Image (cartoon, rainbow, N blue to C red; front, top):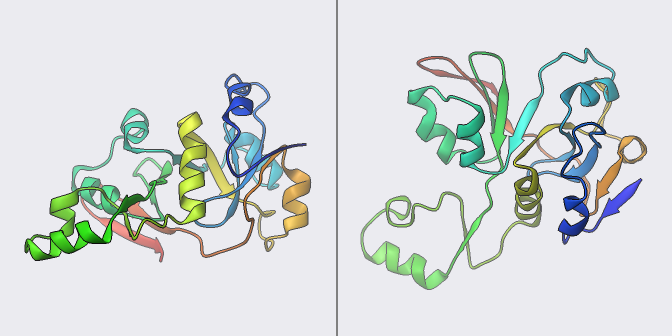
Length: 202
């Protein structure tokens, strides 16, 4: 079992660029909760002891990767772009989540935006903003990690139908990305139809 420091040793990750055949299972703290990530979705399903053909969410590093892989219904494009810690299920049953990397903005710039009488979203256009320069550690690191691969299939780090166990998760991972590992609130889930969205988990 290999371990990656939370500073993200990209030199080691470079050695794994052609990992499709071996498809290691990573254990990492995602932007929501502790999870397994792998390029091979069937391997994750086998690990969790469920049907290996069950569809698994694809965690993506940015919207460029999203456009490469999926076609979003026109009505939902703005909703997807503005969403944070939210997963989406497409009409074809495939699902995804874009892990946004928070952007820093100074308090002075925030004040200037308010004084201008314009909405921050129109002035900045940066998506999820963190005031004062403090970026949530898990969101930032997970975004950096995914950016190296573009996207990885992702699932919670627990055996299907059972609660989270750190010991079980560590034993079943090939590579552990060292940060803090903990169970937290999972992402919201919306199912996208052709003309409207339905909340599956809030």
